[in-house]
Image (cartoon, rainbow, N blue to C red; front, side, top):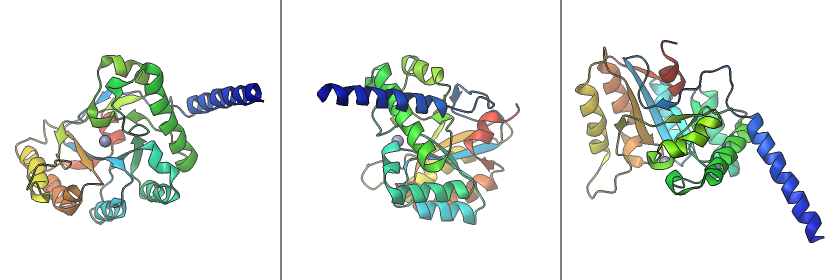
Length: 239
Ligand SMILES: [Zn+2]
């Protein structure tokens, strides 16, 4: 009996690997190995990690009211909950991009290749099963990655997505508020030149500090002359 169960588990695990491979990125789109800024100046891609969180509907409503499309890097385990799947579907229906932020936010630099592939594959699979989307980018938890961890990700056909503007909305510093997050983003935007620069902004929908002044951040980015885009538009610009 024991043997039968382990044989079945082995088959199930093979099947799940095969399924994960069948939902690897669409090869009709170019693989962009590293996205930390856009390929053309004048673009800003807002990216939100770790969701869907309880603030997700508020973030979607703010983005909609400013007619902005963003990119959400989701954690796979959250999509095991029906309520989170509904939130993620709402984002897709509104034209936002959904990408892979690992299953449970484990630091990739501490993982073996097999563990890292499992983190990416399981998330890839649940995003496909629940949302019908093939992801294209992996954002390593905390942005922690080096070339060694990049290799299996690139082998699977994913690009690695980092950022060049950290909103620091996750800061636990005493007294750090939504105004600090606003200043963190807008000081860099205001000091930049949309004819030369572009930004991928790291934010978290779970952060009240980010959510509170998101509308003001969008207004400031637009006022400086930037176009707010999804990561796909940002990575594919000029191709
Ligand atoms: Zn994260």
